[in-house]
Amino acid sequence: MNLRLFQFRCHGELQLELPAGRHFFFGANGQGKTSILEAVYFLSRLKSFRTAQTRELVAWQRDCLRVEAQIGDTHLSATWSPTNRELAIDRKAVASAAEFWGRIATVLFIGEDRALVTGSGAGRRNWVDSLIAQCDPDYLAIAQNYQRALRQRNAWLRQGAADARLGESLTQLVTEHGLAVTQARRAITEPLASAVATAIQNLSAQRDTVTLRYRPNFTEGQTPDWNRVVEGERRFQTTLLGPHRDDWILERDGHPLGKFGSEGQQRTAALALRLAEAQLIRERRGQWPILLMDDVAPQLDESRQSALRSLLPTDAMILITAPEDRGWTEPVDYRWRIEPSYAKRIE
Image 1 (cartoon, helix red, strand yellow):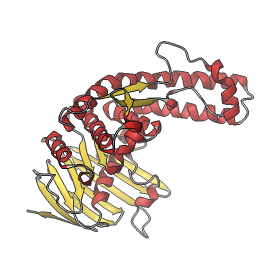
Image 2: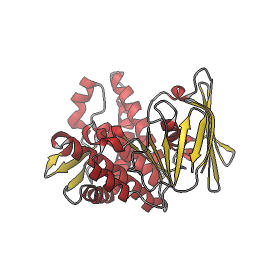
Image 3: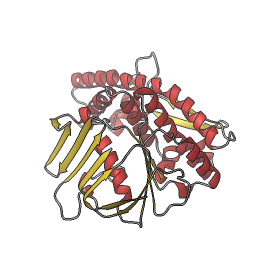
Image 4: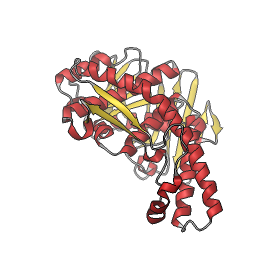
């Protein structure tokens, strides 16, 4: 992969030739190591994993950013400014973000991943939806159609739900698109749960058994009972049925891991979720996603570091950051010292 950053975070201009293999980026804090991973993620998802405000990615006192990557025969570029966004595939402009999104498959490992286990259902829903979309590009439109219908129905409820015919139409849209979302989520859950269980056992040396269970809000094979929630929706002015209320529960010995697991067990489960995500993308797309690992080792004990190291695929591109080489990344194919707008490969 040939990666170029222009006015992205602290990098005025930075170009990296990244051969296939495992890359280790090191340097003092604030030198732009994580920004390299963030740029690849941005090219994959058109958003950052560190901020919801894209303008915060633009270099200080600059007015736009650009990220480019040549991967095999495909060239991708994304340019952003406060007034414009330009996306191109093989140097030809594309108008639709859906056409561009996911052209580079990525899986992100960060210290905050524990929130996938302990946090709200919203984080798990976003994670599963992103996984499905990377496996099946058509799903992105399905999820967007549902979110659009949901916003419209919520707006109708906030306006007093006076137009009954409009409400019936919006309810039908939420039901139709919601059932499509539920079907896709249900289909991914069984292979995902199996991959998570295997990863948990491998990370814990067979000590832990964890199950992943889907809790859909729509019941399979049944029409949603909207009459049951009509009073609550009028009172709260929000839609109370639909896959926006779905969740996935991780359980250990029948108890929710997010509430009753130790911190070590929760971090192990979060790693398992990411490894399972990578495995499913590999199975569905025929090649490994790029693994982006942002200083994850310090939060793991030595046994889990060793287990994670052994589970990382040898034929995937892996980008790893840390302030210094603590040894867990071995073997590493390439080492890079990173400073703002500067990268030196260490032989």
